[in-house]
Each structure stands twice: as structure tokens, then as C-alpha cells.
Image (cartoon, rainbow, N blue to C red; front, top):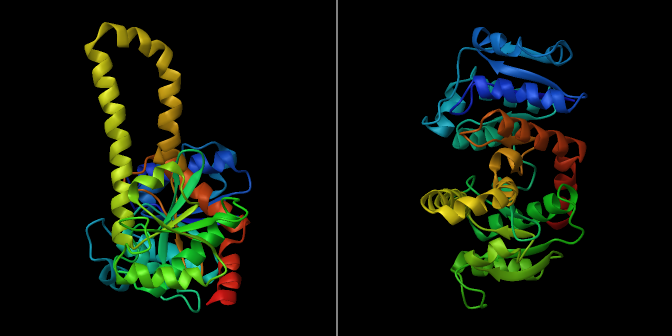
Length: 332
């Protein structure tokens, strides 16, 4: 399997994306990766890999890249030789079976639409993330691709989330819910209320509304919202977990008994942190486009990049785009 990696995307490029590519190729012997970016910066890093891994890493040279603070659609249009655009063009043409980037989120979404192209019938794409909750993963979408959503967008997000949850996460009959400001039918604004009516008459296993405090308790397999709300929920969850972890360490450092108890708690804390660590679960699929496009966290280090590559590989193997295309046409 051949994947394209934007080696210049993210806060820690190109060192961490290159290291992540090495880790991914160590894990999967069937994987080949094209690293798109500045050859002079990339090759000294990947040359450190073992021979069996190095043979499966190649470089497409370009000195142009899109920084994290550039205008999304303008940069993807004007920087035609940027590392991100070239990686996406490979995914579009079939030269690569998918692309991965930790770069500018807006540019990735714009490139998904303008370069890779939307699936026929899809109005707007969605970024989805599998959030670890009480006893399973809850797939939350959108988390940043479509900030202002219309009812049809939320309806289509639900369709795509259902397919991803079923075929990629392995949930036989996913429960679908809309994120709202209350669980009662009278809650929600006009957009959410209209989307609810569309979902009620669909073939999906729609269970109604969920509130923000219900998401961590696995109240639904798929939670649907606009990109603004989803991004706030995701970032808040990340912040809370990091804050709790920091507070626990700080409090234990102040007292003798907690220090003693820490010896017994360390394995549990590591396990808990591991469940919510984006470096282990990194990789946000851009759903609704005609190719495999995976967004890694902007701060990704090598393990998170490798995780995003793992998500891309699984999405290709499970024929995610084909399933979305085929099943959407039954509903749309």
C-alpha cells in the first residue's frame, strides 16, 4: 500500500512526520510512503532508518509548503507546488491510495474539496474523530470542516458517521444522536430541529438529542454537530484530561501519603492517560471526499503521525470511501 505524507505539515515538521513515517513502516511491512517536501531536510532523517524500512520511503521534492497560519482556500489554490497540494493530487490521481497531513486544518479541508473533490451528492465534508468515552469510542463529527452547517449537512454527517462507525469502528448498528442544548424535543435551534426531523424518517438508528455532558458517558455511537461546536467539544475534552492529569501530579507532589500511594497508582494513571492520548489515537478522517484524506493533530510528534498513517491504512483496507459512496447514494 502506498500513502503520501505531507512531510512539511505541522508544528514539528519535517522531523516528526519523517520519524512517524519510519515508525509506521516498521509496524506494517506492506506499507510504502512518499514523503512530500524539501529533500535536503527529509533525506538526512529517513536515512537513519533500517534498510528494510528505508527502501519503502521515497521523496517527492518541493520547497513550497503551507504554514499553519495561512489563508486556507487561497493557499491551496495559489501554492500549486506545496507539499500538501502535491500529496492530495497523488491521492486524487491514484498514484497514492491516500494522504496524511498534520498541517493547516483549513487548507486540508479546502484541498479535500478543491483538489480531491467531493463525493457526488455531498454538500459539505466533515472531519470526524473517534473519542474514547466510558466503555467504547464515540465518533464525533464535524470537528472543524464545516463551521456553519445547514440541516442537510447535519443529515449527511450522520449518514457518513454511521458508515464510518459500522465499517471502520465495527459497530453493527450505530446509535446516532444530535448534539444539542438539551435532550427534550423542544430544544435546539432551527437548524438542529430541522435535521432531527430528517433523521427521524431516515433508515438510521437515530436516538434523538444528547447534551455535552452526556458525550463522555457513551450515550451514542455517533454524535453529530456543526464544525464550530464539535471543535469546541473536542478541544475542551483534550484540555480537561490534561488539566486533571497535571492537577493529580501537583497534588501528589505536595503530600507524603499521596506520594506513597502514587507507587500503586502509576500503572492506572498511565492506562487512563493512554486511553485519551491523541498520540495513540491520532488521525481524523475527512469524510465526504473522493479519496482517503487523514488529518493529524497540528502538534503531532512521531507516534501521533504514525497513528494517523495507521488510520489511513485501515481506511483504505476497509474500503471506507467506497462504502460511503455506495451507501450514501441509497439515502441521498
